[in-house]
Image (cartoon, rainbow, N blue to C red; front, side):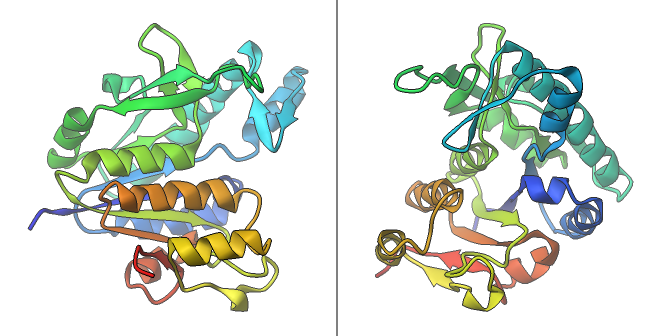
Length: 263
């Protein structure tokens, strides 16, 4: 049987909470076997843009990345956040390396089509360098991905961290048993976002479509679940969504939302 690799994505709200992030790094460092961490951006880029006087534009909840905003994203995501996480993992005995998509040509992307909305320097992923990633994992190295890809022509691109998690997990599915965990500040998929007791413990595509139609699943959870179901369809063995601070319990399946195919 192929070795299991855990691909863990942590959301921006966890990045914004130093205590929660420390707990997540404790749990992540204790995971056995090869592992990958992918982080979002949090609010630091917005705060820095404000201090620098760089206006920020949001369209349908998504940031427009103009040239100045791209520079800020690279500094914050690929610099401060990424290297702080790597340092935290090193202090816990994890041989971690911080990477963007440009490092080792790990993630190629193309600039998103400006029609109907021009999001600027935002990347849509075209490929993951699975052989290079596999070499890192088999050497005992733990990659920590910033949400940045590149176009192969010298330009870095701001890229959705959930999509990076999906693409990375998918690329490894023929070599490893892959467990993909989308972790954030909630217990999992909730029917009522203000009530942790409304947790949906298991979700398949039919039930997901029903809940979307009923308006029970909306906003940022939709692209997250879309990526999660695509991962299963692409051969990822297991996808779990849940609270970042209880990572071991997610792996034990004692909490969180598990996705599956069967009706």
